[in-house]
Amino acid sequence: MASLVSALRSARSAVSVVVRRELHGTPRASMQVTVRDALNQAMDEELERDERVFLLGEEVAQYDGAYKVSRGLWKKYGDKRIIDTPITEMGFAGIAVGAAMAGLRPICEFMTFNFSMQAIDQVINSAAKTYYMSAGLQPVPVVFRGPNGASAGVAAQHSQCFAAWYAHCPGLKVVSPWNSEDAKGLLKSAIRDDNPVVFLENELMYGVPFEMSEEALSKDFLIPIGKAKIERQGNHITLVSHSRYVSHCLDAAAILAKEGVECEVINLRTIRPMDVETIETSVMKTNHLVTVEGGWPQFGIGAEICARIMEGTAFNYLDAPVTRVTGVDIPMPYAKILEDHSLPQIKDIIFTVKKTLNI
Image (cartoon, rainbow, N blue to C red; front, side, top):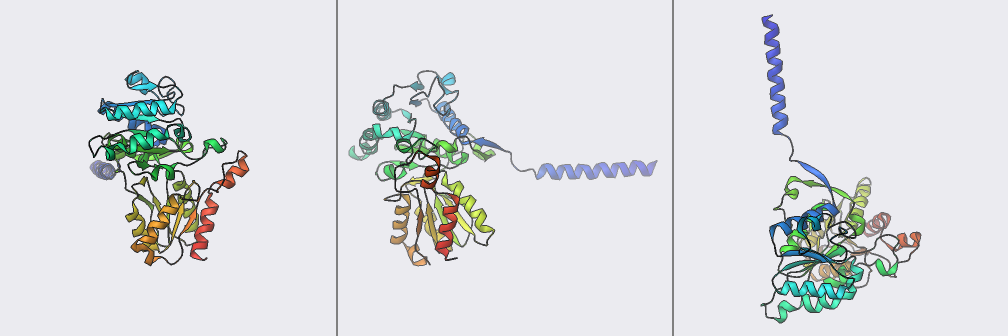
């Protein structure tokens, strides 16, 4: 009997040690969050934190947003903080810029950035240039946000990427998040920034869930504007992309890895100011570079990266010309098969990588 009691005590002690070890080694909590919900969290937290923050745009309040990004905010904060506007982008973008000049921190939602063309004078001439023209006396802390780039089946007038358009203009910061962590951390930083920020989301990414760490779920979580992130380490070739096409690059890299090609994938996160240093450091390691974007090729983001590499020290490390994977240089067709052929596909990235590496 005594030996049985002793055995039980030993077993209980062993279980206790295992449990303690498992508890001690438990990773920090994380959860799946969609890009839509991450954006919603960011706005909710900043509205709660700073009473100067408010949201305006078409259907953002009672309808919870055209893409439900502002779901629940109107019920929580009311008509004075979440404001439905008429269908007049020039008008409500102007209201947002004026409010920013008066000391508020507006978030101006465009239902899509295609409609921002109606308000481009307010974005470029009023928001972007005022701080300079006032000799630094008048900041304009406004965020222009909404879906950017091609969606699906919405044809030429609703399927273009405005990253290069807005990144061309000094005085603006231009942000293009990929996953949920990017969306939350960068939007919070954009709202707190004293400069006008163009925040380019992607409609096709809204419903995609990503793992978010306990740190990223915190109300204090911020991602600095102007800093890229290496999403995958590699030593054979560098892939640089932003927004939805980071996913394509990672998928292509996974396929190429099975063939012995290790791609380093860089998520730009910010278009302006561009983190050229991270790209150059990677190119100095891999000696090859491919840029990937959904926009048109002429005067695009990839073209700018090519120029920066040409003009910098990383050019001397290249073993092959920089190559670009872009959207086709045409207005977007409506037919699905033509639409698919007009945008970069994973196979296009793989083909370009192999061509660049001459394999």
